[in-house]
Image 1: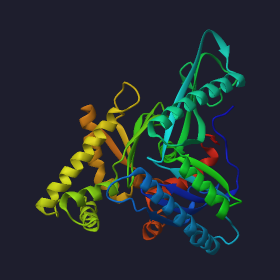
Image 2: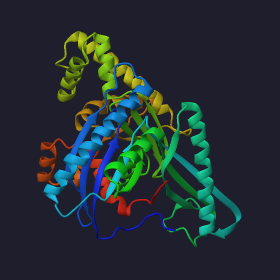
Image 3: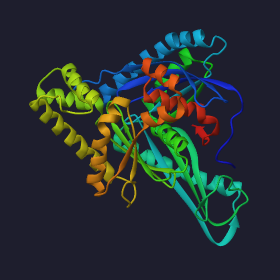
Image 4: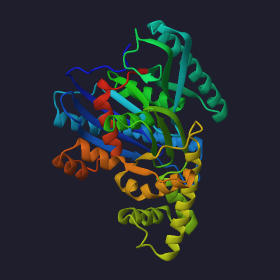
Length: 410
């Protein structure tokens, strides 16, 4: 057994579907094995009408409507764009990723130890994998009881195997006295996964379906950008939530989230100042554009400062939930839009410091992806077309799947 496989020289064409907390992103990408990055042919984001007072049932209904509208646009506009740019190609894969609160990631570590050294066999790895499956199903059952909603496992992956404490890519046949296997599973709401399959059957019948949690995509992107980095925290700031993941030893260990995101802050500010949501959004956008509150009037500035203090307090709570007794890592990676990453990075760093009493470094994913993966001309083209970080990350994940950890679609 090997954890990683190599990709052949074929060209793959993917329809990217990223179901966020308050929006749905769709894109068409062409992945040529010899290229450093994929070609982003077309992209569009559809926003859901969540409303001022968050309600789970109403929110998921709005998200399903946004998903249907996005798939219709993908079927018409996306296919047309592909036909114009690459007339010989057709979409062969639907890559779906889902964020919190509709999806989350479970990580389980199973260990076998014996006083007498033994040889690692396929049977042993299969046994450890089966035990990891059982633990994941137990956690899934508990989560369903807690949240009162149907959940399903979308994807599984054995992301790490260690022999005597050392990571190994080819464990079979190696001698060891202790072996540990880490399995990561992506979980999602049944309503979401059923809707995806129904729309695929109606519009993209001949395509292969791949489903992931957004945090799996985020983690894989960071591993690709920083292969030697093993200890860090991932922060995914979306429109209706902020999700956090802890990575130790290069392995995704724990995920959690708070239902506070970009649009949540807009609604809260609108309520606080007793102004329309559109005015609150304009006010915050002005602050994001300037990366400062200097141009904001005193009353509005006080309201935004209080809003951000409440957001930092919620993050501080998350930063205490690490899944173990250790503090969050010193390095944090932030994923959001370029505009929001630039504004929120200091607030997130301060929240982390409040939680640990130590300084933390925040890397923004937009800058890193744009800087390392695309040429000057490509950057200009992406910016002109309004291609956001979500497209870049999901597209790069699709492009790299041939050499990434093997994911089993469940």
